[in-house]
Image 1 (cartoon, rainbow, N blue to C red):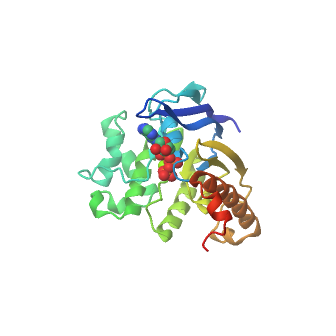
Image 2 (image 1 turned 60 degrees about the vertical axis):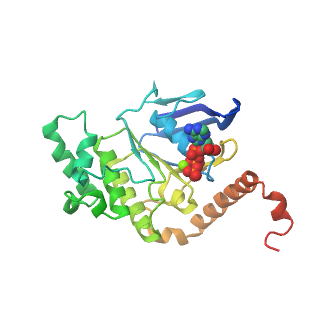
Image 3 (image 1 turned 30 degrees about the vertical axis):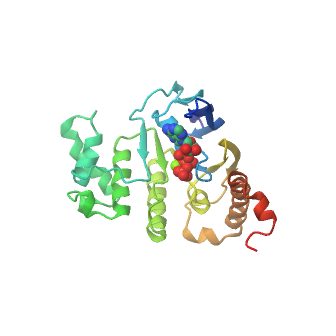
Length: 268
Ligand SMILES: Nc1ncnc2c1ncn2[C@@H]1O[C@H](COP(=O)(O)OP(=O)(O)OP(=O)(O)O)[C@@H](O)[C@H]1O
Ligand SMILES: [Mg+2]
């Protein structure tokens, strides 16, 4: 599989008030192949969003380079579609207009047709003229996904897009995303802190450790596709889940400094 994206030893520090630098990401090296689905998994604060923002061109790395199709990323571009955790639709525009609004580089007369096509992909044709306030959270995220897909990006960057949804809706959104991914052979870099979600969706899961964010392990998810719900009960899934949970747990203990407390007997 050819590498579409290469996060090439990327580090990021933020200046602190006192003038010293706070290292958030330490030499992250990760590739994403054409048509591949890779998740970034890690505890809160380990730098997942920062890394995604660097790939989006919204943040500049302190060291290292991100390559997309062999070109260095220096700014945002429509070759990358972003979906965020927070709902980011314009409240004064209908679903359809929200999608059209993103298509600034597309001739005006072609925009309605493209918007309609992608609203259909996410199953919202009947809600094209609704305003965000008239849509549920899950529906708003479907519009946001349609908006990102409508740009026909080289890569989809998704930052905990289902984080604010209830468990049922979240499961359905995962199914929807997988069906679109299989249909369009999307390349996806997906941020989550949900172990099951990362395993159900991904070809590989990049587990990040915290303080500073480092690649702890890249786990191959060799589970059959299409991924059906029952897969969660299979022995392979449970083995992978335990493995990833133990990696995350060790990192969380380190990050919270709770090691001594837990070693004393936890709840007692
Ligand atoms: N613009 C900024 N200026 C200073 N520090 C920042 C900035 N953006 C992020 N940070 C710091 O970088 C660290 C990583 O933040 P980031 O939001 O990337 O984590 P995350 O893994 O996405 O966490 P979460 O799971 O809670 O979303 C945090 O300590 C945060 O305070
Ligand atoms: Mg985040």
